[in-house]
Length: 175
Image 1 (cartoon, rainbow, N blue to C red):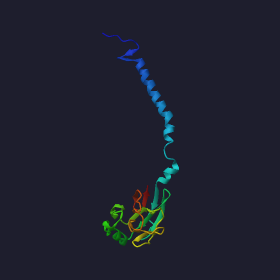
Image 2: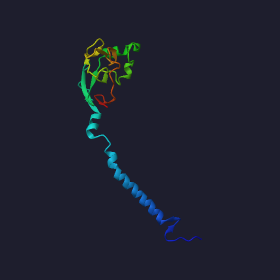
Image 3: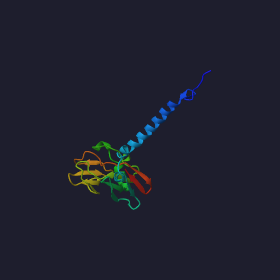
Image 4: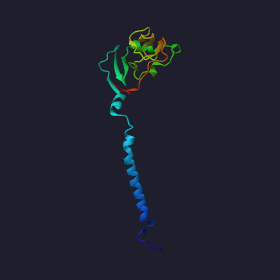
């Protein structure tokens, strides 16, 4: 028969318990002390506010476009006509410098949402101008079609599509 001393019960010594308790409190205390330093690395509230933009689509008539600002950049929100959609879908991708089907550039075909900055030197293209019915950058003569794809001029890439989602039928969140 084994005898236990008051310091030991079921093979566990009181000192073992004290070591575990002190270690646990030390870990909690260390975490509480370094938390402010880790937390200060998070983006500030004003940066988070700029990370997304919501736009109301209800007042944008078919064939018209509005410009919203997202992260300091203009974003074109265009309610395309059936003719715009058809012209964008009928393009032979082999003719494009930066081939990208129209279906890959839109979530809903009637809504085209893209960053309105020319991919050549960062100018803002003019809507409804140019040879392809889309946008024209007057700085150096880049022409974009009704899907925002580069068709002519020095720009190397299509107009960028920002990350966006439809919140409902009348609202989108960009970013």
